[in-house]
Length: 275
Image 1: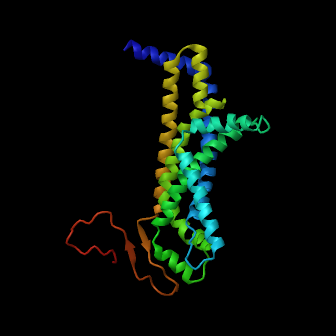
Image 2 (image 1 turned 60 degrees about the horizontal axis):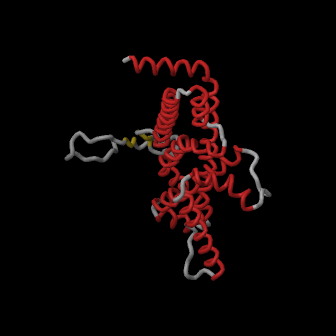
Image 3 (image 1 turned 90 degrees about the vertical axis):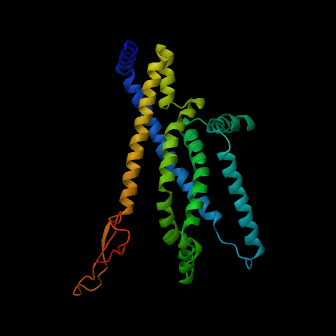
C-alpha cells in the first residue's frame, strides 16, 4: 500500500510542477492528430474515388493506360506506407530528403514534417477503407444514377459517398484514436508532443514510472473521450427510430407511421411496422 501512496504522491508532485508542460504536450498531440486525420481522410477519399473509376472495354487506349498507371501508383503508395513503421517514415522524410538533396531541401518546421508524415500514413489506410466503403454500396445505386445521366464524379459525390461515409465512420474514428497514440513516434524528429514531454520530465526528475503513469492516464482519457464522441456521432447519423410518412398535400391526412422495432415480442407475429 505504501508503494501506491508513494506513486500517487510522486504523480501529484510532478503534475504540480510540470502540469502546464504536460497540458501543452496534450494540446500539440490533439492538434496534430485532428489535422492529420482530416488531411488523411481527404487523401483516402481521393484515392478511393480514383481507384473506382470505371474502365470499359470500349474505352480508348489512352484512358486505359492512365487509369492503369494511376491504380499502380496508388497501390504502391498504399502498400509502402501501410507496410512500414511511421517512425521510419518520419526519419526518411526529415533526414532522408536533406541527405539525398545535399541539404538543398531541408525541413525547418517540425509541424510541417509531423503533419505530412501522419497525414500520408493515415491516407494509405483510409484509401482502402474508402474503396471498401464504395464497393459496399448497392451497385443498383450507381446504375440508377448513371441511368439519369449523372457522370462518375456526380454519382460519387451525390449518391455513393454519402452512403459510403456512414459505413466508414467507425474506421475514421479508429484512425483518429490510432493517430492520438502514434504521434508519440514524432519525438524522433524533435516534435514536442505529449510523449516527448514525458521523456523530458523523466530525464529531469528521474521519476520515469510516475511520469509514465501520468502519460498512460492522459492517453487513455483522450481515447475514451474520442470513442464516446464517435458513438454519439454514429447514433446521431442513425436518426430517430420512428418516422412519419411523407405527406405532400397539407390537406391530405398522413397515411400512418412507420416504427422501427428493436426486438419482436412474438416471433410468430407479423413483423410489419405499419399501424
